[in-house]
Length: 337
Image (cartoon, rainbow, N blue to C red; front, side, top):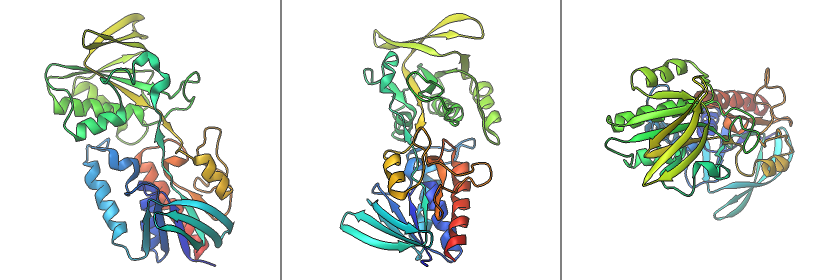
């Protein structure tokens, strides 16, 4: 029986799992398909509901695994084959320098998630107007100090691809309400003259302090929340015209904006079904990795010895991904000792 664990994915869930296994005497191979660790967390500027420095936090966690001798890190690496069973998995890894074979006792899948590209929402002018961006693109603008200045209006649109059977997914992406509030607060801090509007279906503040965080956007930063779906975003004389209906008042609404930010749905990681087939584990109807009994064994895949962690199982915030990473590590340690 091998006492080594393979962790697939170098985001916060995978990093957490690797750290916990190493702290308890286990050996880890941590693989990441990109050229650096950090995953989606590394693309953020601030955390929520406390506005912490996201890049500093993820850098700190990455440094921990990089300086742990019992964790071998392989970036630009993917799994290309897997055979065997718990305690004796034979895996093939494709690296920049070629392929290598390893025997591991357990596998943790922490492959992260992907933000949906809202190209199907042509009514929002995404891809046609450079002033219509996704939440992730807004994060990049903030990191590069490119947020609009002066007396500008910014509109944030919830549920673009979430809770939408026609063009997206029926599920809720869970974090959009909170990170749109974060973005509105970031906008106000970067430009006190700006005015922000948030169009929402309803507010889902999942997590400790999230309700208060969203309320602070409204009350302390004067963000105007309008309940209703945006019907259309038009370009007009260098500005954007956002048309919607205020469903609480029953009136049509038009907001002239300088920037529109779309809260894109969280979707399964690219290639999740192919990876699941290679490992011999199940996915749900969307392509998220399926745990066996989410209520009592949330990190167990359909195959013994292969465990799941983080947002590759369902949309979740950072705190839940960290918790699931720790739980999956405990389960991996139990079968490799």
